[in-house]
Amino acid sequence: MQRTPEWIMHGLPGPDELRNNGVVKNVGEAPQEELATGERSTRNRVVRSVLDHGPSTVSDLAQRLGLTQAAVRRHLDALAADGIVEARERRVYGARTRGRPAKVFALTDCGRDAFDQSYDELAVDALRWIGEREGGDEAIAAFARARIAAQAGSYREAVAAAAPEERAQALARALTADGYAATARSAPHPQQGEQLCQHHCPVAHAAERFPQLCEAETEFFAELLGTHVQRLATIAHGDGVCTTFIPKSSTASRASGASPPPKPPEPSKPPRTSGTKPEKPSPHIHNATASASTAGRNPA
Image (cartoon, rainbow, N blue to C red; front, side, top):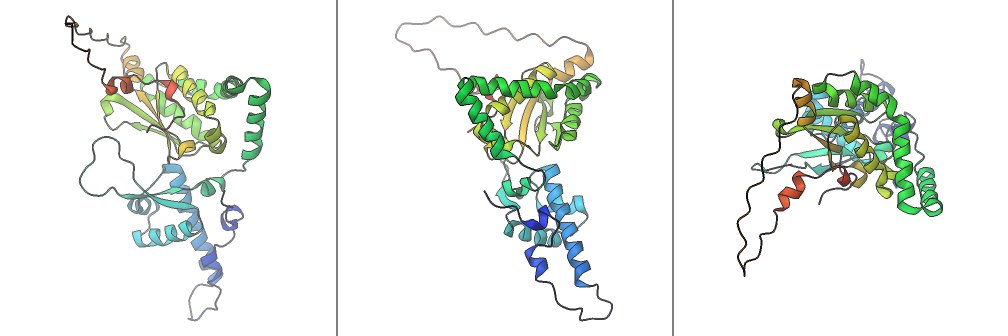
């Protein structure tokens, strides 16, 4: 694991700023110390924006921070050199449009570590000990569920106090209060549901080795919202954001007071003829019914 640069951890100037230690050459020019402080502050704002909003384009960052795109690129270059952010191709869900996907900048593990005091190795060692001494994977899964249950009170209160159509937003706010930098937004096809996005995961390193942590969290979301949910991506498996799909039926039907629409009748099966093989089910049917059991597993 890369060591977190001290300019982020302790508020020190970055390497490029340390080089700016010359004397003031022109009358009226700001002292270099003040310039370095401004650079550092802006750079921290860039990092924080990526943390709060997930992988972002230069244009997104410039608009959010009120900077020029040239200034944003300069800061991103310095952050990339320090191992705080990395450029990657934007992930596209659904049909691709023409042209190359926009490049986005995401936090590295090193960049995420700068925002919390990490006890990753301690957590991993403890979970490994539980698995070895208390019953393997099942014991770890039981621990993960107990951990979620111990934290569930504030989430239940937040969701119960919200209108049915706003429960995903309420859950996102409660998660943000616990450091997950979460948002809820419409899915690419809004009529299908919403996506709950967690842009930060305090236990990402432990979850990378023990996916039971992600699975327990996803099971809890399903139970809390009263519907099956599907984990689409996780930070623990290399994605920029933990993304959970919440079907619209969980909010829309409750908001109207109506019961969920009945399932359409299954089409009648044609009589089998000897010598013919039954058709294999479409893989899309399996994907459409995926549930919390897929939690923590990054879809291929």
